[in-house]
Length: 266
Image (tube, rainbow, N blue to C red; front, side, top):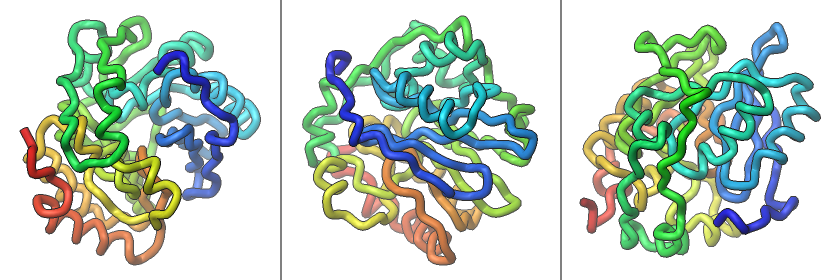
């Protein structure tokens, strides 16, 4: 994977998601910038290998200054691969949930993927994806238990385990904006390359091939459904906004075992 160049046409800005929230889609995954009225901002997730230069250029062109921090929803390769280079370049901390630390401090690799989960090209290719361990220790800081981060006022950081043990989502109650990471997606993640060509955005469960605890994943989606989000911007798929979003998330939570959990779950 490290030798694969990212075509420029596969790097697409996601503008005007919500007040102070914009994104950048890099191949099949999204990163987000959350801005504050004083001009400061925080990067949410850090993309696939070889994406650091694209993220830096996007930040320079649209935000004009380095972020105050990087927050990781979790430690899978498609969310952290540029984190070390970006943190060094910007001299900023990287925040993650403590339960992700074994995978972010060089101690452990994630479990092998469930290659038969959900079918689709992404599942077939999953054994090729990096699983770590990586070491972000010089920059790594623990997200506070309170769910509040000084660099992200007005946002609540919610522990939503299941996809990984320390997965987190971010929620702004003032306008019900939810950044769920990989707790759920708006495209079928196991078939992303096929779905990207034809599928309309709709809610799906987390990427099945790398989800480690399906009971926890179901509870996390149920918790997020209770927030009644009106805008969702996940790690995979297009952002969705409107009055139908909350009802769709409630349906996903209610039908999670039937529509999200693969038959060959571990």
